[in-house]
Amino acid sequence: MDPIEKKLQELGLTLPGPPAPAASYLPFRINGNTLILAGVICISEGKVTHAGQVGRDQTVETGYAAAQVCALNALASIKAALGELDRVRDFLFVSGYVNAVAGFDQSPQVINGASDLFVKMYGDRGRHARAAIAAAGLPRNSTVEIQVTVTFE
Image (cartoon, rainbow, N blue to C red; front, side):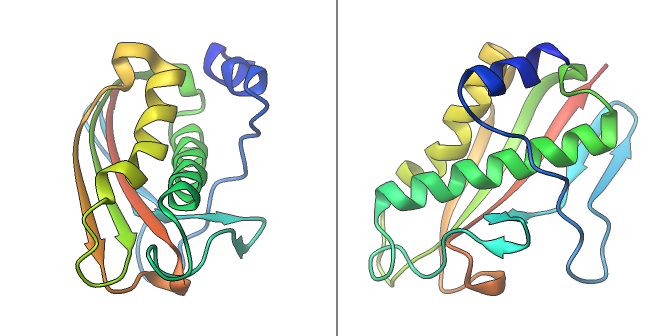
């Protein structure tokens, strides 16, 4: 077990299987030493864990939890692409989308669920540039979706 998976286990978190593409796209692309992941939603065992809009169906706190589920799915995709999570050198960029009511202005606090997990797992290597955007809807009515770009060895 690589050191990152061991940290997940110590936190009581389980790495899921990698999410399958839901349409006509690849789950990831590799260009040189850069890995670009397709967007991942908050899904576990084929079911959306958090559905609906923050500000109506979900709170900032449950949105944070949804973003953490997305981060776990992103880590599963990284493992599928690279074989080991510890091959990640740096997280470069995270795009975070929050299914939210009109005028919602707390997307950064929601997407921190993913960002905080990456930093817990990787330390400074997990720090990244980021966008946190409120959207009127996301696939399968998911509360959160993230896209991740990393470099690797």
